Length: 299
Ligand SMILES: [Zn+2]
Image 1 (spheres, rainbow, N blue to C red):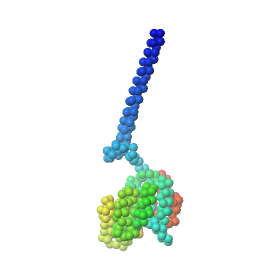
Image 2: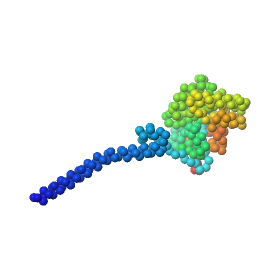
Image 3: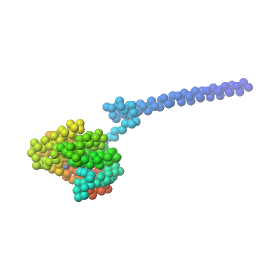
Image 4: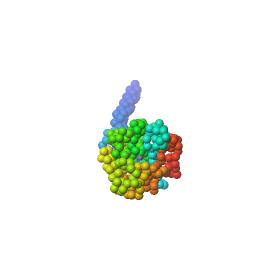
């Protein structure tokens, strides 16, 4: 009888001890877990982006992680696409159907292409590195209004980027982009507006003074009105002379695109970059196949 009592007491005390241990760990754990997570999260964000650490510590999980750029072994080749308008005007080789442009974007996205800003294109060429295995710089010439009406909604739909080279004297013209439209598109971070000079004249026929004002005044107009540092220039009709290149540098352009065909490289010259012309007959399949050639042999 006594032994039985002793046994039950022992059993009770063992159970009581177990309950205390279990409840103790149960209380401790939930508080310990998030604290650990919090410290890891802040550590990660503070090393990746230190300048904006105040914002990041409040909601660390929502911040995008910065992926490092890939260093290329050989000289990096960059396809720069040249579009004009998307009105699908019959017989006009510069005018493609907007549905074709959408097919191009879908195919580029599916093939894993990353669309560059002018600043990223400059970084690609000057550091011989890239933010993704396949990159492309999509450019449109002449600042036509259909870019705002047709192209911009499609860029938003697929979250892909493009640059428009605008003629700065045409912002009041009915078929060209207005300043308000430029500002709205720039704010989306999907569109960059760069210079196609003031009045779209053949630069090779102008005096050096005229060339300088065409290049400088258009840059100043965009810098002031869009609150940016305009770094890229597109030569009207792809025409320029030796002086143009000196003047472009003087006017502080870092990149200039031509109408010469080919992939852009540092060797091709930052102020004489070739481009791939897009025709109304350029199928999405052919486009992706041809520009993917820039990324063979470890490039
Ligand atoms: Zn043009």
